[in-house]
Image (cartoon, rainbow, N blue to C red; front, side, top):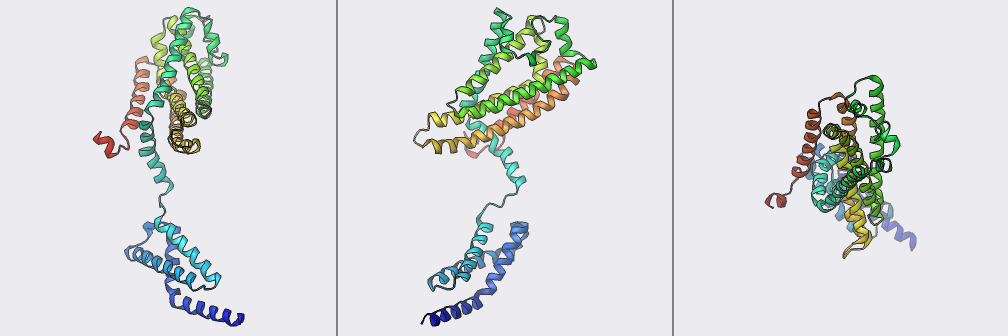
Length: 341
């Protein structure tokens, strides 16, 4: 009895396959073509056939399940239907289009949604800089508290104005090598700070706050050193050419960390897991932006800052590039709702 039943099932499977196999074969060929070359490789007739044979295959699969055909045929149809579904309905974006969409829409929109945490990041840096500046004015020994020795090098309160001016405009090879080493050290330091202020933000935001604030005090003390020697304008221009981009990157990384911290501290009606997942999307985009800005700052720091010897031109380049960052982030990828607003 069992053998007879199996024989009947096999015959039904053979007949069922024979009646419909041409359509499955055609669908499989179209799916393979899309998997290999993308949906744009199909002409109109092929795209129409893809949709038509996909529907037929899904119907065949439904019927095959109802009449209990052999498992091998069911597995084949399930696999074919799943592959066809993916090529028809899944996003067909290439890596280049995904990256382009990230920079033309994703990152600018994430920045505009993160106004509050960005204000916190920039505010902490600014307040730290003010504290570092005024404490140095009260007592220059605070410089050694805020500025690490490897960053300060010969730039200390004991240095003469002439020596400090040479570090801003010097052209001799020894000094240029020293400046290149300083630039490399400063970039490495700021990159580490950016990574830390982002990654530590999940721990209730406090570490991100402290690191950003401390980096501000270091900046303020460093500027106060030059201002105290009558070189404030020159130092401001020297820092601007790369600092507008680099310091902004640290503040943006801090904002990303704060996003994560707020998801832990104030998840609202969501679970902390869901809040981290949702806020983490914008936080990750802010980190990518900070990384891109640090890379741009490295180029400015490694080349333009020492090649450009005019304070005015340094200011123009630094703040001009800062204006381009603002224009991109403020205007790119605006939605209809943003335009109407």
